[in-house]
Image (cartoon, rainbow over all chains, first blue to last red; front, side):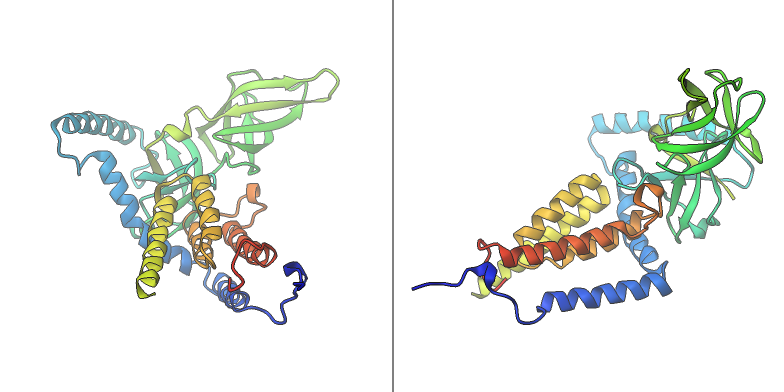
Length: 241
Length: 98
């Protein structure tokens, strides 16, 4: 008795799973084209209580044991000091302080999710600061309760910046994790430690030059700079409305 | 028979809760490793598309890192589902009914 090899048996018609997936793809395409914010708003509303629950657990409002209560008090004192510091160095009186719910490496996208949204008056394009002076990104997608922050240092993002005392204009390219690079002619007068600013926002520090890679064989040098704070260590951000 | 069906549904719900928790609080690579494991564990795992859509809805953004495609995980989840579906037809370890 001989059996036909399984791989030689050709399916005669499209299976039900393929039909179902085709319908799903069609629905998704329609949703993404005509109501791009619908899914985002829906899932953000679903996720928001869970993320806030995580925040409450971190802040210790759920803990009972005395040891954990002591740890909670220390944590709250630290948080209180952080918030006072933010209040002292606010960008403007209309700015909003928001808690960072999610940050890399938990999400694959190099973005922050914060616990303030359109209900708090936040709009797309609003600038996001840390410690009142360091600009780290801008609001990209605001839903009712949460917002996504596009970090300037996300890999491949390009921005115009001024480098050094002589405000040399350059295009900075994000390299992820708060780091950037810019390519400039080799003979420009830039030193390690020089500050980097953004046009129109010259009072806010964007970065500090960390390293200059100059190869004598090349006419250009690569300026590596990073933001003066570790963006992944931050708990709070300030949004300038 | 009825007991088996109930058990299968409970396992599926449990896997769904696990995936939801991974998306909410887990590392992104852990989430997607779990999704791929479940894709091959269950006969037809439609839920992976839901997890892709949910992931992009929550975290997605058009970044140069991902070729400015905002729905990269949705596309990846559909591709994974289709790959697993056609792979099953080729692999003899799976039951014909699948």
